[in-house]
Image (cartoon, rainbow, N blue to C red; front, side, top):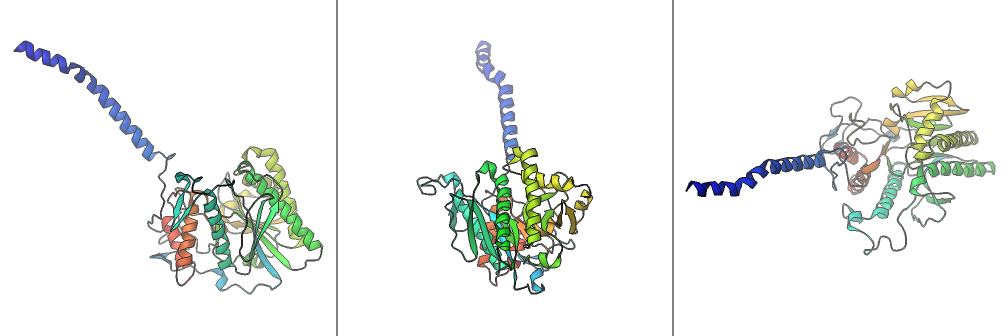
Amino acid sequence: MAISRWRRCLLYLPLLLSLPLLFSVMELTHLHTANVVSSPSNPKKFDHLVLGPAAGRGLPNRVQCQGHKAINWTPFSTFSPMHDIHESTSFVTVFSLYNNSPGFGSPDHRKSSDIVIVGNAAYDKPGRSLALLNAFIKFIEVSMPRSNVIILTALDSELHVHQKNVEVVPVEGDFSRGNLMLQRMRSYIVFLESRLKRILHGQHDTNHFIFTDSDVAVVDDLGHIFEKYLHFDLAVTFRNNKNQPLNSGFIAVRGTIDGISKAKALLERVLNVYILKFGNASRMLGDQLALAWVIKSHPSFDAKRFSRHEAFVDEIHGALVLFLPCAVYNWTPPEGAGQFHGMPLDVKVIHFKGSRKRLMLESWNLFNSSSPVNFFNILCVILKSGRTKYDF
């Protein structure tokens, strides 16, 4: 009987010896799974609006929400003086479609992983780019109905936008992804050169220009920039960021001979610095780094002014540069980092960078379907969902 029990113990011995190893493997697997879920490099993204508390609740000079309505936001345009009939403002953006080879977008070509659903619409990658461009144009049509939009694109682009007050202008250059930011700066310079020639050939009406990314929503009339600040050639937006104090997603140029020529000369200087010092960042950030280098290296410039919220003017290499706070003219919804203290009451431009682009489409769809139609209906939705990472 004792021998039988001993034999049974020998049969279970391998299992007993393997238990510590089994538990170790299970523990490692659990830790690995936990790391995959919680790792910042693998953030969970959502394919729908995820609403939470509105940022900035109870803080002074911040948009306050009652439900989904902003209860204390007053757009500047409600008390802005009438614009001079001989002055207008045009928005200029650089846009290029990728993966638009023959057959792209057809059901056989599209991968299910490339499809994004927003509302009742399904978009592939080129489709969502065009939807964002359309939203960009529509926001401007509402906030500044007298303005027009100029789209700079590649010579061989097949971009066709059949909308009122929209002009597609082909520009020579390399619009590939890896060269896009460098090409954007070059395109701005080429465009300003062409407009300068028009003025010199007899066009007398003043047309100001605002160069922006196409993932921005203009929620107020920006014509007041040229009325309120009478003495500047070029305007850029700044933030309190030591390494990247300037954002190139918003550049305004006064549409006079002096304004255009001086802005063009300054951007040419920035382009040269871009190529010489930041050429390895031709796809992203290089233009911002070059712009900051040109401005901060000017002998009389005081970079401490970036830590303040007020707009200011300084002369940089012969051009009068107006510095406007990003918090008003280039505000970005938080996405795990950034401005956690809500939306400023005087916000004019909302910049949907990165994966926030889904939020831009959701915002336009909400605005377009609301009644009465006004921007009050989207500001709080942006504040309630701005920290969520979406699938764009």
